[in-house]
Amino acid sequence: MAPDQTVSSRSTRDASHQSQSPLSCPECSGKLVTANRETRCQECGLIVDENQLDRGPEWIASDEDSSRRRTGAPLTAGRHDRGLSTEIGWSRDGYGNTLPAWKRRQLNRLRREHRRSQWRSKRERNLAYGLGEVRRLVSALGVSESLREQACTLFRQAQNEDLCQGRSLEGIAAASVYAICRCNGLGRTLDEIGQVANCSRAQLECAYSAMNTELNLPTAVPRPQNVLPRLVTDLGVPNDIQHRALKLAALAEDIGITTGNQPHGFAAACLYRAGQELGCLITQQELAAVANTSTKTIRKHRDALLDLLDEQEGGQ
Image (cartoon, rainbow, N blue to C red):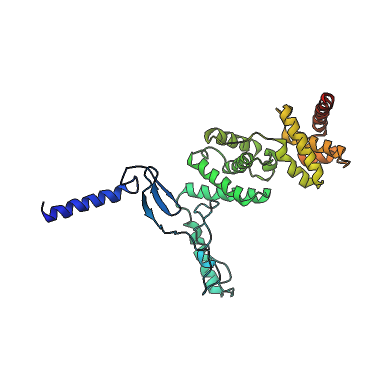
């Protein structure tokens, strides 16, 4: 074989090897898995690539510069561009010095043009508006940052599935926050979210129904145990009453009397009964106001708890 043909066949083999290695193992054509900065084969264990470069931000401060400002802000799902947009300052520079009048006028013009060119399409502008509404709702409800990121990701998923067409963006944003609260077992009701949302209750319910159906959300069944911590915090009752109320709620759930009942009303009844047993007077009006229910509902669930406790004492 001629030398040029040998070189040509070798380069062809190397090119095919390079094109095959990112997809499958070059030895056994097995599946490749990347973990701990190395790529290995699941079948034969061959290490195809190792010591990969970590192109993320360096959070360790150097000897020359003790600050970490050079790394920039981390990526976030709460903004339409993942947080990579440019923010133009107002009246002070990076050192805190006041800018002259001509520089402020120039920044105003730059800020106006930057705002006009910030979104490349109407879809991206709607995404930015919806994510801003999600952040506002999360801040008003006092939800954690991790749930905020989940709600923003869910809003992105809803827009990718074209669920925003024909529906209110405010309703989709409020439904995203409510769905994340439901999926994580937080005791947030539609009434609480509807009070801070810029949409009607009907728009919120319609958006949540569409998202729950189309996106197959892993929503958990509402439980009184998930509502009790918030009621205890709002009322400021001792921890022993909370523990007793949790036991009563778990006992009622095991028997099955919580099925078909609103979790807030039953949680208020458990807390009311626990306060009576431990000598802490909690009025039904206070519980009804905090749990957003009626005193009649609390008395109804209280009677069911009393019947359950009487049956247990009679069985023993």
